[in-house]
Length: 284
Ligand code: NAD
Image (cartoon, rainbow, N blue to C red; front, top):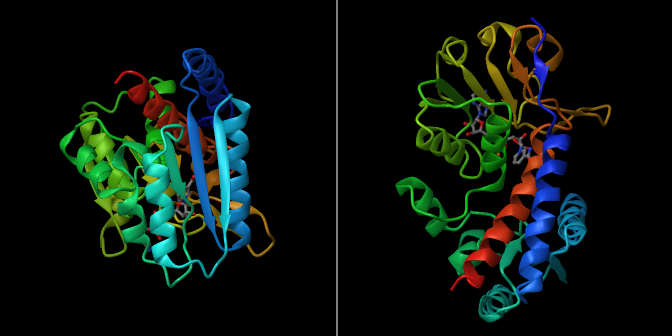
């Protein structure tokens, strides 16, 4: 079998075009969705990420603002700035780019963002809402994975989903979203002894490990949907996922490439969360 590729760029473009019409409708009512991105310090990778996020907002008509702050910004000053943004009605979403310089407490910083503006979905209130199935903001990467499943017509209900990785931003929320969609979910991690055996049982296999080509063809059930969240930089500078794409594509039914798979969906869902934040505000 040769798996069908799941084209994250194409799906992202389709969703962003649809969002642009909704943004225009909100703007016409005086509620242009606005995202403020805070970057503290000069981490080169973070600079690229924040620029991409701001550009993506602008491309669909959202108001986006990038605030750069020096690496030695005090925690008190950062928290005070977030409080100001919490109170600013033109700002619907606030994103603090991680990682933060070491002297700043990232947990405290994230908890200072008003939950109704937490478009990254990292606030404890967002995690709690996801846990109990109440409306909140879903973390963008797992949210994007769910959109991909929807787009290929894969309903998780009754399926066995195996998630490899248990981070707060990918693995755990991914498992909760799949559970909410009535999949039977197994979470594997670094202390799971029979990981390959469990992975082979998956109808839906999500890899969020951070190890190049961790998932090999013998770990995949024929016909499975394989979502590769991993982004790893190889010594030659090329990007590679957590799945051995060339081998696994001959076993899986569907597979996301890296790059061009889950990656473009993450920013797309950040836009979706910002749009939802503005829609909620407009309806109050
Ligand atoms: P993380 O390091 O926080 O978590 C990795 C998880 O993998 C951990 O829970 C750990 O238990 C598990 N793990 C590590 N080694 C393992 C092993 N040998 N066997 C089984 N499990 C093992 O990473 P993260 O933030 O969840 O990110 C995972 C990957 O996804 C990274 O490559 C990251 O760059 C990528 N990522 C991509 C996007 C995107 O937009 N596509 C977004 C976030 C993260």
